[in-house]
Length: 228
Image 1 (cartoon, rainbow, N blue to C red):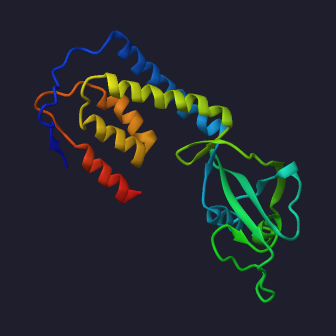
Image 2 (image 1 turned 90 degrees about the horizontal axis):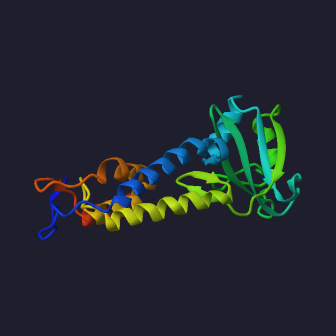
Image 3 (image 1 turned 60 degrees about the horizontal axis):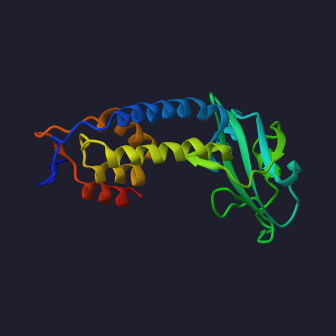
């Protein structure tokens, strides 16, 4: 669905400054490097059910539990732990909450919500797969995120650089193709930053032509709200 270019929008403006094209390719290159390295340094946040299913099916044989001090969890009380495991080419992670204070003696394994258990997480995992090997790692209190990826804190630097670069390109470049500036901005902010940042840099950053039909920012904003 598209709409005509807003009346009064000049799509025949002058060529952008020479630095604009250089910045566009630099940001695109930084995105490519980040995409390639992300699976190597980060983990993909997943639903606890995915790990539980893999354990029950024997597809997951080793996990790593992130706890304070890299020690086994206490046997009682309330605590949170992130569990990571290898799934083909990608490392995945899932967050679990242990709460023994609400334990039902008739059904101690009952889960009220996904990821919530009433026994120590290690015990819950061994109940699903007695042969699973469990290791420990220091709990990370802070990290960076890109979509569903959990990344080391230092990765905030290239992510911020990409965000600033794309904003600079949008504000100082020619009217983009396929959508108005606001359409691209809302798509990046509300729908999928990764997909639409790359889409803008590769396709949208090309100069709009006078006869182009482009989607308006309001339509993308509404779509983002509904999808969110």
